[in-house]
Length: 256
View 1 (cartoon, helix red, strand yellow):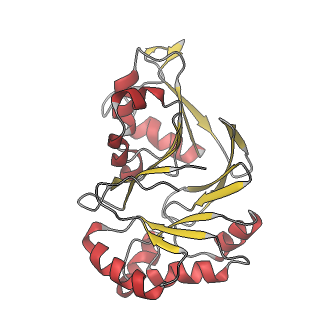
View 2 (cartoon, rainbow, N blue to C red; view 1 turned 180 degrees about the vertical axis):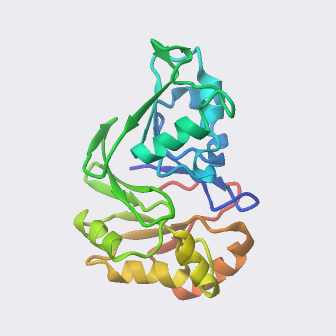
């Protein structure tokens, strides 16, 4: 598997745009500002977007993506998400006030956007990949995604706090070759992390240590820009093992 991480920051002003993972030339997970790393022809090739949740840093470039391709696509872009996430998009984004309703443009018979509600019992087959959503512990309805291709499994937890149910769900997936794990706040802001559904270095390490099998590689993402320097220092010391990596190289697009 060759996942390109277009955006991995937990906010603006960090070492990259916000969350956007390109699974292949047609499939994205999330549509944060990292999506701007794609060229216009690359944007026009996108046909599937799996959303983890409706927070702005994960959806902010979805409207612009659709505006770039409307009238030029042979099939709609399908957005997959929980029913709760899609309801937020319909009511608060594609509502003709914040942005046009692209499920009805250019017309209802040939829309630019299709919304498909999914649950954590679904298994999606997209472009030779099997993708399984699973529920994580965040402040709103949120999915993580397990992506399997060619007997290799990459798991993206999305925004999540520490939760024993999440440990169980990750264990149920079997061996994880690559775990993309968020870490938003430093340890001294543990209470803020818990109340907002995020991880600290200590909580991230606790989550990994609780798993039945240690993942092959662990990729830390979603560092909040205001705390990035402190987080990088803490993570480097706290998880100083060869299979932990911090996604934070300015000007480079990491591949997993």
